[in-house]
Image (cartoon, rainbow, N blue to C red; front, side, top):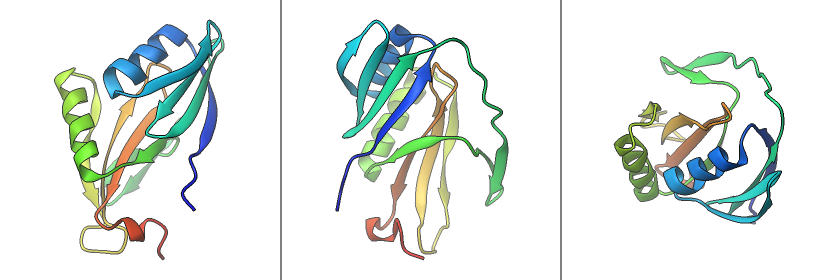
Length: 137
């Protein structure tokens, strides 16, 4: 079953959050008001709710020699979409965690990159070499 996910997260500024996801990433938005906004991130719904400043201790972990953020969320897209979004964000001179390929030649081989949104969340874009290996052991 292919079912979209829903996530609700606090944000500092609805305006900056909308600008980042719509103008920078290329997502669309739906229902909204001055205190919240629904973002359509490749068919998945993220609701951002205006909140006061918050702080997450974001410890990192090392995977295949790369330091990655342990607290993050993301979307799995095809390789063409991954490259298109990466090029767009790079052209905007946004601070990206560079594109890397993990598990090369193994089950679950994938390429991904991270970017921080205006609320401090780490967003990962990921593309699997073979889509049927996303959940295989």
